[in-house]
Amino acid sequence: MVDAVSWKAAIHDLYGSGWTFARVGSRERDDWRQDVAAVMALKTADPRGWHTINYAPEVNDDRSGTGSPFMPWSPESLGESLYGISRESAIQLLVALKGEWFQAAGIPEFENRKDGLFRSSREIISRFSSDAIFFTNASDAYENRDADLMNPDTEWSCLSVYTTDCGLVAVSDTEVGVFWAFRED
Picture 1 (cartoon, helix red, strand yellow):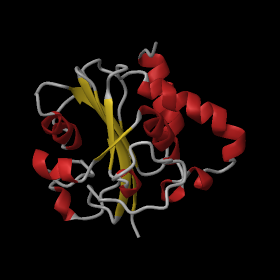
Picture 2 (cartoon, rainbow, N blue to C red):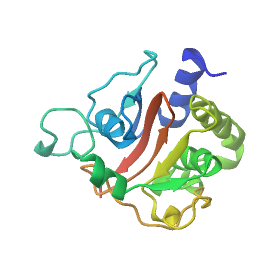
Picture 3 (tube, rainbow, N blue to C red):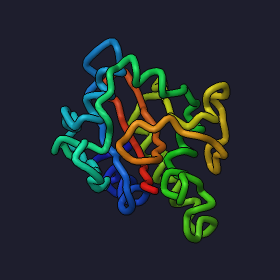
Picture 4 (cartoon, one colour):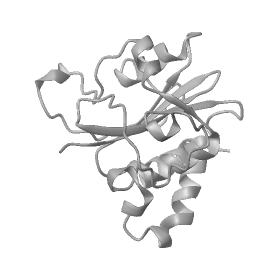
């Protein structure tokens, strides 16, 4: 079972460098999109007090000094940009986000690091109950919730102030998680 120490180690293994974001908030509303929008806007704290990451640098004045890399989203708009994926696709995506252009092929020495990266991804996903649901903005998942997201050849519905971003939203009965990577061209 994941605890604060194993969580921090897994988060740093996958998101400890680069332009990344990893944060969890409480699930307080029936409409989980409201809770996800609050996490993206940095308006909520991790309910367990565990480690978070926001390594996305500010790129312009549109961020209004919030420190959030995300555009302000209404729950309705946010839901239109996310596609449901399976737990296994979510595990793959958490690893792929570490690579250039959100692909495992872009991770230096991937084959040598693969087992450890997947262990970290499973550790992160284990925080969310077995009946949790997962979403991404990668269009490969639009009609295929079991899409292979290790090396997606896809487009992304960008949710941030950057030119390109990709990520995962995890939703359980008690928590929502947002895990994202960004690029600026």
